[in-house]
Image (cartoon, rainbow, N blue to C red; front, side, top):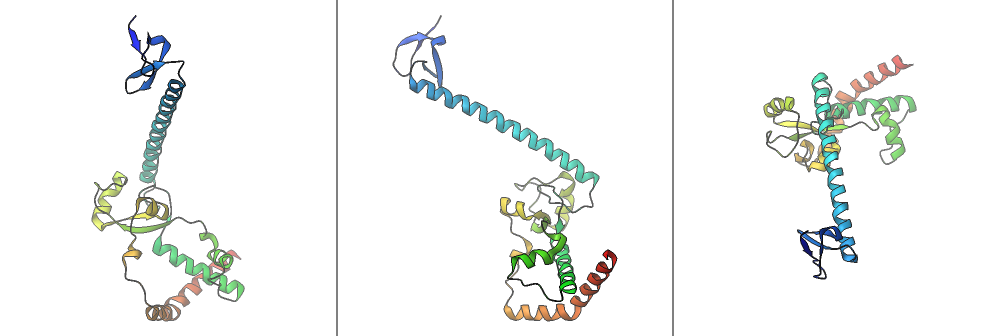
Length: 213
């Protein structure tokens, strides 16, 4: 049986009486340092196995979501996590309609500084996953995008990404790229909305309330 030199005390011993402490070294089982190093090695091996299992499960889930997206291609989804959501313009349009419903029901506008009224006036949109438009830099970008989205993304130059993935991946949204709106512009936009678009949203809101009542 080959002799082993303990890396801690230098004593000659056998492999059976030693433990690996990393870097190809072994030491007597009786040393506290040996037990500590061996435990760290075991814990690291367990963590690596768990991480490998997590990655494999993530790949399986990713393929499953890709298949689901292929089967249901017309439902808006985040192109990173593939979860269903509502595109940003559709969300804001729907939000204005829900707020018009609130005004018809309560007889007043919601208070934008009251979180509870803001939540109630948003109605069924609370918790909706909003999809933002972000620039697409080609399929070689460091972002997972389903294979069946590459052609569309290359064609239009942007992809739809949910708020969570925007933060995780560090994307810049289309709205963030636009110049800031000045107060005078805000007044003009509000006047245009109240004159041209607001009445249409109020009609839609009234019609939907009649259908549900």
